[in-house]
Image 1 (cartoon, rainbow, N blue to C red):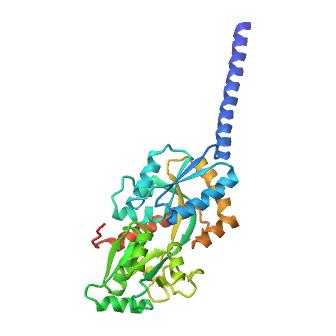
Image 2: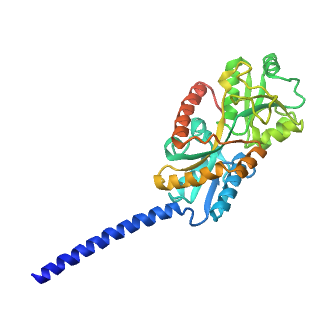
Image 3: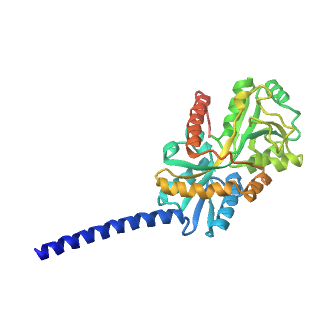
Length: 332
């Protein structure tokens, strides 16, 4: 009887020890999430070194590295309109140590144009909007136009129309030209480039008359008079180009568009880890130093919307772009 009693007590003790151990494991898992990062974090960039995503990733990595005392390694993966960067993220271990910085069009536009290995609407999830901004329609310095009305008239007067550059086929930079062509009846012929730099170089040189480009890369050239700004796609005029009208003002509300640069994770990353990253990133987004770097580079700061709102907007944009592209013959 005594032995049996001892065994039962030992069993109870063992059980409670196990329970405590499992609590301990749970607590240490939560502490590990709270203590993120415990080692260097790799930020894959969907774009070339020196491009828009790279500038934002470096600003974010720099600020996070300072506040969290661990290095954030920026790793640009250009090519295939971001598909290579996404493949890289999906092949990495599902943890908080490999994240991606790239534009919202990775979900809303590019899948319509490029056959991707992963359905980005389900495979990746936005943790935070890092910056936002519209596009600006720019013209070659010697193109005989000063405003949108003159651009449309010139395109209509030429049987071959006018060609326009995009920084990558399948992005809004490409879609915006299709929208303007549909809305105005002017013939605009798309030429896809690998990044803003080569596209802008051809516009400056007068080889390609027009381009829809991100504000950050065009701004220095607009300010130095090397290209002309015609109109912006944001809903309001940009504080960076206060004298340039919006497409909406000019009677083309279809071209109202603001893209954003996001921090993305593999959608399979557990919610606790996602939330920890979001909290740390949120603090950076609100920091004056980060906002200053962005504005200096021609970006508008994040609107601080939450992941659920971002995701909902992405799916709506995906549908909208699909309607625009239906029936258009897109050549990559």
